[in-house]
Image (cartoon, rainbow over all chains, first blue to last red; front, side):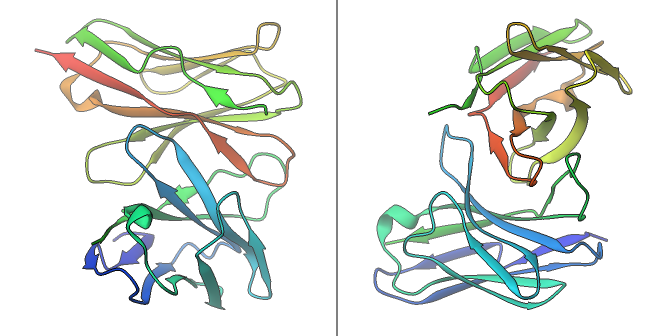
Length: 114
Length: 112
């Protein structure tokens, strides 16, 4: 059983549509993250949350919003999708440990915006 | 700005040979490093990590070496197998606040 799950796994949408990507984890971790990955590039941080009441912008938060509904759930929204948001999106989790906090990733969502 | 990077975007090795994947970092304040493996269609998978107070750490068939003098990190895979074919990322933790910065990745191709 996967510890970090993402839905949907694939999504094709049109410019201007609102899209929500869901992430759930059974690891009991406090911290959750959303990244995007573009071809040939590393992972770039969109938003992160260190607990249910904590939301922080990452490197590339413009055009995105998030909601931490519970410790186990962290969703990413694109209010009005645009083609350059076509990418692979990954959710990750980590424990609340200082300085050696490994992040564990979900399987990813492939989003295409036409 | 400071960033994590990789020397070689693609590495091709013969099955059974050893592989070495390199990573350069520029932030001397980085205190924790992780190597991830990403297979096609999957999310990054943790391989091995190392703290800045160490220069070597070994796992099963993998070894990570850290040279703080030249800010260089490497991942060594012994007896490379076809299942090792993937993209490998290094990542650094800069401020102990668990914000990882990832390199662009190296693709490892294993020839039978």
